[in-house]
Length: 79
Image (tube, rainbow, N blue to C red; front, side):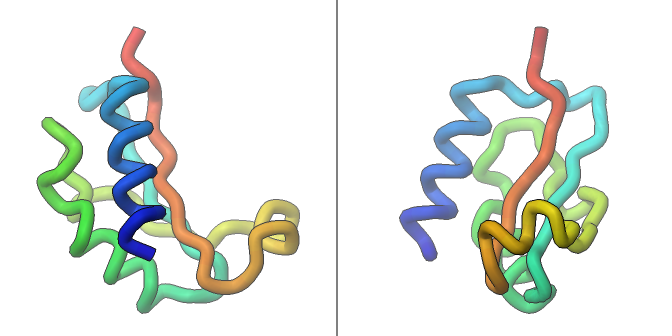
């Protein structure tokens, strides 16, 4: 999963995270994988307090397509 985590970090950095807005980290029936994800990406997205991010479970509408073990980050893009 490290390559996937690195891809997420790269995309977030490229998009630009609005650090004045909330950030969320979600999982699909896998809170332990989400914790590993948070530990891995901590301090790798400039200005983002990932440890303080809202944590949530990805809903059935998205989760059914991605499957158990999915993790991701949601953020507002800088304008």
